[in-house]
Length: 157
Image 1: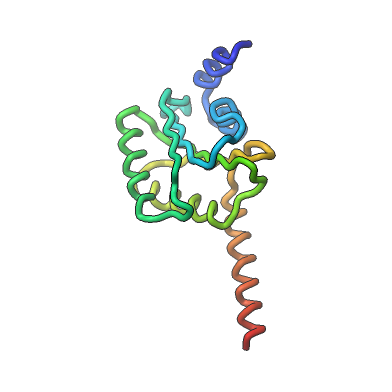
Image 2: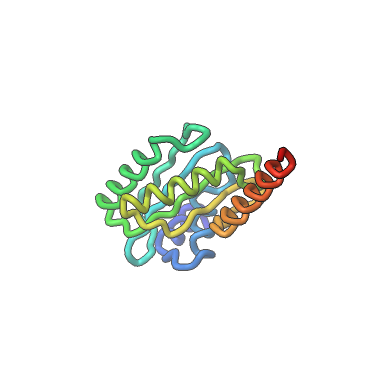
């Protein structure tokens, strides 16, 4: 099967499950080459909309431009009849998400919700493969950081 056939199949297969989403991202993004975010658009049947939005040169930490990104994505959704989006975090050379990545994940989830953009899921593409970002991981990491901070405060007291 040629590369074009694979892409045709990906764009005609609904991304209803997390495995479907991961397969779509793997087929579209491939292996990570540069630190950036991709926005993939899905229609009301969970079929990929043939419009991809790569976003590079993001600042290290989320800032007021996250709202601009959410506004842009909301407009693209309206213009392309997209019902939901998949956010993809491309991270070459990395094998895990770092606190700054979690800040982006959280900031985008909040900003997109404020603009009524439904996020089907967030996906990370890094050196060990492609996987759905589980928000449980974010909560666990925040709890671990709070415990460390609490322990440091107890030592200072």
